[in-house]
Length: 289
Ligand SMILES: Nc1ncnc2c1ncn2[C@@H]1O[C@H](COP(=O)(O)OP(=O)(O)OP(=O)(O)O)[C@@H](O)[C@H]1O
Image 1 (cartoon, rainbow, N blue to C red):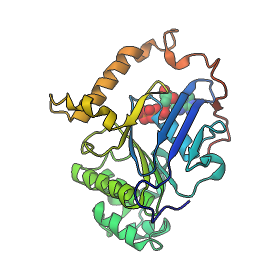
Image 2 (cartoon, protein in one colour):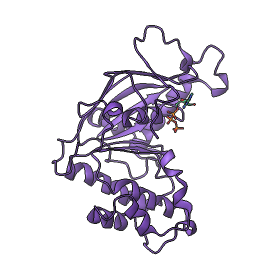
Image 3 (cartoon, rainbow, N blue to C red):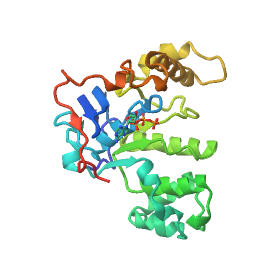
Image 4 (cartoon, protein in one colour):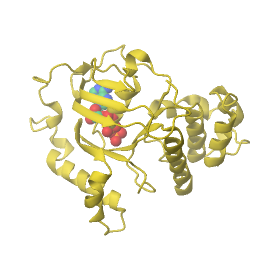
């Protein structure tokens, strides 16, 4: 699957139908999730810590086995097809120890295809303000993160699944980076799902919102659905998007109660899976790292 020259709106769509997932220890990861995210969309995945965002992204990326027929990316099951154009950037990738060794930036960028995609490499170096003379054992966390982002994004992708990894970026770098991502969706019709807690610079960026809570999608839709609601917020210095998300998280907390009540029988996370039909279950060997 390659979508490099597609105009916006014709990129791969993401379809999730009745997706449930159980971890190896028997606890419920995801429950009955359905979504339709069109090609060329930029989706923000919103939810409190532990809501299930990473679990969903890993299943979408094909790194975990989902039940048959529950996930379709451009009409194809990502786990069995091992899709070429899907890039997932999450914690495992960030923790790769190579980027802490005494190694030069150009070598790292070449090791991930930089010389095959020199235009993209040079563009990312410029957008992320990377100094090619840096040695990776002697850079700051944010500088290292910028090199890692460039490494992860050089190879053209049709779908980008981004699990919050921009935390170390300064405001300007993050703003430039988000602008570049928007360009990728507009120029090439690429599709992005971005799980984040940081809403700086994101006003006007998402085309869709997905709100997760306790392994479920509580609500989702195109931004137009939330326009009226976000228009009514503008107090307290938060963006209107920030106000909406804050409201969601407060409601979620009120609904769930404090975490130290978990396991008392009131906890919705451990609801019975009976009646769910088929659900994916984590096994020792269903993960692809
Ligand atoms: N391998 C696992 N086995 C059992 N439970 C797990 C496993 N991985 C995650 N969980 C639990 O599943 C829930 C969802 O985790 P997940 O990492 O998807 O949340 P998240 O929304 O990405 O959170 P955060 O915002 O903190 O990154 C959490 O309660 C977590 O403790």
